[in-house]
Length: 165
Image (tube, rainbow, N blue to C red; front, side, top):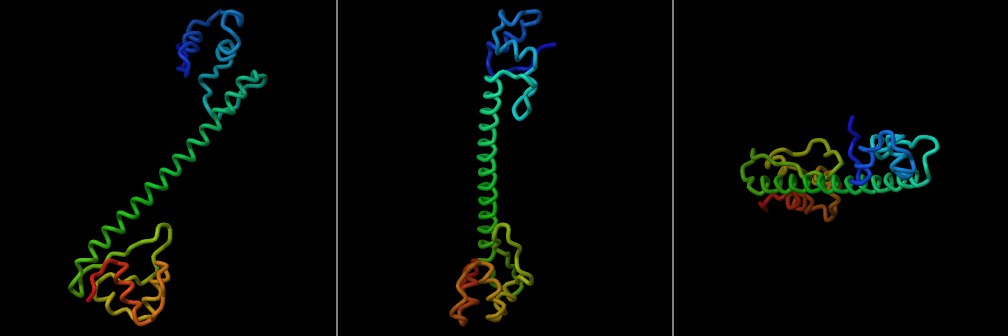
């Protein structure tokens, strides 16, 4: 049965031709890999008892690199989620910008990971009908200034992309 591939072509050749070879013929790294099937274990697996120091160090280095790579991938995933959220919000603001009739839909602009407050207005008429106290709930959600009270609804509409009345 052929051995699984390993990163080093020389090691792969040595493993393929190792049956019946001695440690002296193979060299210590190839002999250990042949005897303990290191190529199968892969990263994150424990090495067998008595593994040579070079193999232990190699395994530690590989695991450190994989941890770093996983963190980088997590960062990329987070950036993609943020971009997706931003695009969704841009689309919502574009939809809101064309609202003119009282029953035209209004889409919420969301803050990633934070649930939208209850009773978000879903139509242009509902946004226009918000009183200052109701507007304050949404201004706080969006981390927008609450004062002066008289302009709360205007600030909220502007943030949502709704054109001035």
